[in-house]
Image 1 (cartoon, rainbow, N blue to C red):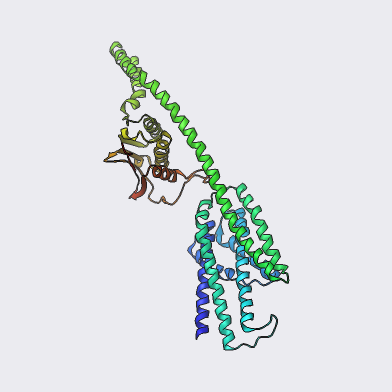
Image 2: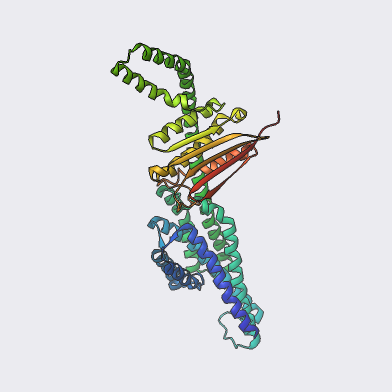
Length: 432
């Protein structure tokens, strides 16, 4: 009865750790879209995750590797270089942990039963119970190992998923190759002293997972460097625009009065009136636009208003930002520039009649409150970082807004209301 219970428990542990490992792979690669293929992918992975690895067993070691490669090719989408990287990173961990748990369990069994390796075993109920208990414990250890690996690696996996360029993948592959060759060689050419094998297996597993961290680190470094450069260029752009704005302000009212005088003196001439109306239309955008109380934000909103008008997007803003002077210009650019860029990008995907962006910002008691709303496609997933092809260097709008808002002790959140995407920001005002 107890043996049957332990066998059942071992099957549960085996399915559980296979699922965790399967989920880690799913984070790296995209499964085939058909549901039947997804279910088949998990079922096919259970015997692969439970592969039996013996010392000096070329067929088992090589067969597992070939099976792993075929499994990825059949059930997953993605480039060959990414699939090859997955094999180089996770094959050593799969082989290493299976070999360690299996070999340690066998040695514990022989010691508990006082039986030498190679000696014939006369199976009794107690020996069967001991063997089954150790077998179940090894599966439990594998479950704990892969669950721990997922908890440690999930943050890094989410950062590098589909974000690395071919060059960075090749760097990861070259580093992973060392652990791949080490684990393959040490188990196949098993020395008589098994103590040597254990630390090498452990080091190979650690090295494989270290490559995941390295890939995440490289990815973050490239993104941070690119984003810093982009923000600096953006800041310089708006700084130059601010100077230009000051020059425009100095001539705007005079130009308006000059046009009124010309219109009165034209005597109703058709050509003159047409020219005057054209000039009025060209400066109308400046006159109609509401000033926010913050010169830097004025430039950003004016710039986005111009882009929206070119893209036939209905853009409206009711912004009172006199109390936002404590925000650094670069942070104002990060918050409103990114929010409006995202809104414009989403609006472009809609028919012209549905393109609408609304910006509101004002002081509410001791808080600065801002809301950016835009219509969006109903099937647009919120989880997508970006729709651009170069995902390594894009898709940081909302995360950067959140970091900047949190810098001032505020918070932001997003929500959808039907086909409307809403970004809400609250920033506490500093003590006077």
